[in-house]
Image (tube, rainbow, N blue to C red):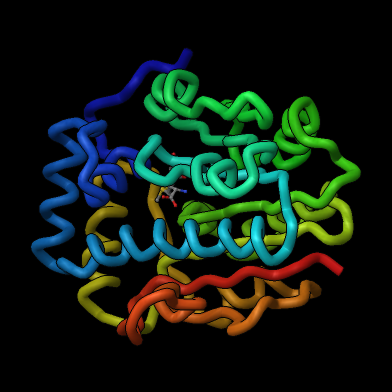
Length: 257
Ligand SMILES: C[S@@+](CC[C@H](N)C(=O)[O-])C[C@H]1O[C@@H](n2cnc3c(N)ncnc32)[C@H](O)[C@@H]1O
């Protein structure tokens, strides 16, 4: 197993810090605090991204009838993980989690447990190996049945935009018609402080994360049928409470025809 590196911040751990979790190290806390000193809105962004994920899974289970989920870039277990939201509504749901962080691996096997009727699996594979991900997922998911591909806060880790598009295309190529894609990522062009804080984070030695213009995030869904309201700032995607304010995290959900 790859050793846990506590000398540079890690995406999964800093995200856990902003979400209010305890599975992080002093280096993550320092980088997280340096970020919020420039752009405090990142805490709302992290929480709104998770809330969007929860709403999109509820839609997938209740409105779209999906029972299989492939969540790549899982992150550290937190409240309302994908399988918990899905299996609460449909206990027979089957979920494959994929990440390449050693701390996520250490926690996931213990915490991402399943209902007896459903299944969960964790695969330690990089996003840059889409065919390997699909092969591993097929051990748990039926490749002939629709699957929701969840890419929540991970595509920004692929520096080259065309490479990110290619990864999405190759993952979707392995899923049948009626499958879905859920993406949400940090967006450029909403707040200069956000961009400044992200640029500084990318200098820390951590795996960098790149904010993208909204039209580039929207283009990940090309060729798919977007669920209303399309690609929007995540709090505006089928909100359940009072009218929320937009933030620099955009996403959507779409069906493969
Ligand atoms: C910002 S966190 C998002 C976590 C979770 N999906 C969420 O929405 O709360 C990004 C996650 O992507 C993972 N990640 C980054 N690069 C990856 C790669 N090449 N392959 C697999 N996972 C990766 C990180 O380890 C981290 O868990």
